[in-house]
Length: 209
Image (cartoon, rainbow, N blue to C red; front, side, top):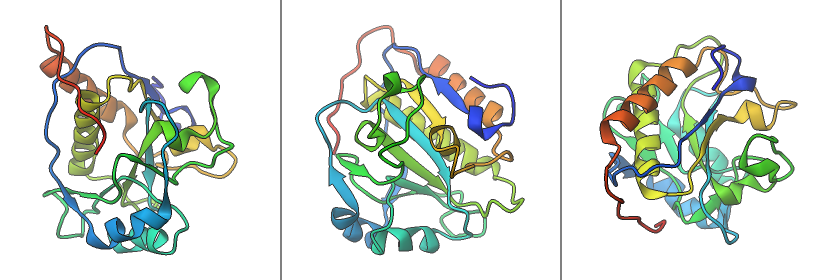
């Protein structure tokens, strides 16, 4: 874990221990969900090992969803922006977790993540946070909601090990979620969830939907 505010260093590795299954306060985004079959791929065999944190570089959920409807990229969740009605209420589910979203280029990798493997979309889940990347601060609720997605995934995917930034995987082209993302606070929230919810007995595992 990086203690700096450098998005190229954002990485947190989860210890291999059991966590409880939990619900996620999510609502299906109908336009994104309809687009998902044409903007995602069938997953290659393997398990979910990685979650990648992105920022939209735009000001709205609708703008982010447009890249899915245009089949340019995709992701599993959107965390709404502070000016949107969904902010403070729920995250948007945009693609089935059972599908590989197009959120990291196939050639991208990092030697400390998934053993240096490429084609990380097939091993990962993608979270987009609505943020214009032009000096807009992330809201406390956005950080909490993103950490809640991590907690949900920790309880569902036993092989999940890494949480990282898009910038760390594609440093030549991407900087998101950017230096204003409070990574230390975010990791502290994940750690608090881990301490609170660690089980002393094995959890019940769930298959991706």
